[in-house]
Each structure stands twice: as C-alpha cells, then as structure tokens.
Image (cartoon, rainbow, N blue to C red; front, side, top):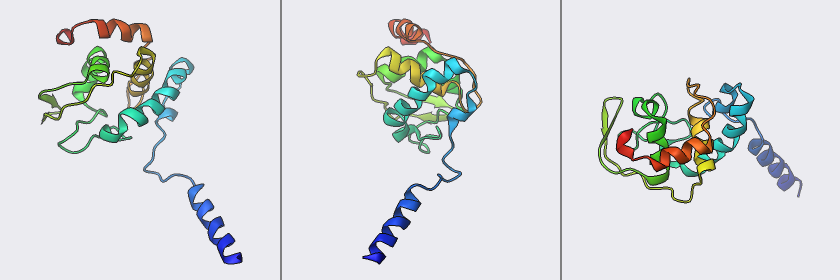
Length: 149
C-alpha cells in the first residue's frame, strides 16, 4: 500500500512539474491588455484547430505543412490568412522560398470572433505586433474575394 501511494505521489509530481523550456508561453510576449483579451482565447483556439499541423511553435511540419512563424506568406496579408482559416486553401503556395502543395481544410465552424482571437494571438507573437484584429475586420475580410489579397 505504501509503495502504491509513493508511486502515485511521484506521478503527480511529474505531472505537475513545470513544463520544459521547449514549451514556450507566447502570451508572455504580449504587453497590450486589449490584445491580451483576444489572445488568451486565441491561443486555446489555435492549439485546438491549428497547432496539430502548424505546431505550437508555428514552425510547421517540414516540407509538408508550412510554417506560420517567421513566414513571409503569413506576414504578408492578414486578410488572406483570415480567409484561409475559414475557407481553407488548395494549390501551391511559396513560403520562405519553399513550395507547399498540401491542401489546408476549411474551418467553417469558426465564428468571426474565433478567427479574430486566433489572428490576434498569432499576429502578436513571434516578434509581430499587429494589435487587435476585431471580429468586424474578420467579417469584412471574409466578404472580399481572396484574389484581392
């Protein structure tokens, strides 16, 4: 009995120990309280909808899934990124000189506020500082044709 309690305590201690240094908290990069309001929920939504492919650190999956972090394609157009989050994307794209041709599925269940929160999170970490991206802006971007981006 004592051994099982001791083993249980060790497991709890491991589970509750601080995360490794590889698991960064990108929210700590945000100092604007208005941005933080959106970004807190955006981080959770990103982890649930995007990080499986683009990874928590935004570095993508090799030559299969493009990075978001330090990616010229991602930085170039917030409206395009918003449109892709909602509607997906097919066909070749060039990201940091690398061609990617893996389709990104649409996320039709994401509401404009969800996309605003994800966008605000992503565009205010990894050295970017774009401020709050509102749901009104997202709605406007979603109504425009993607070829305009």
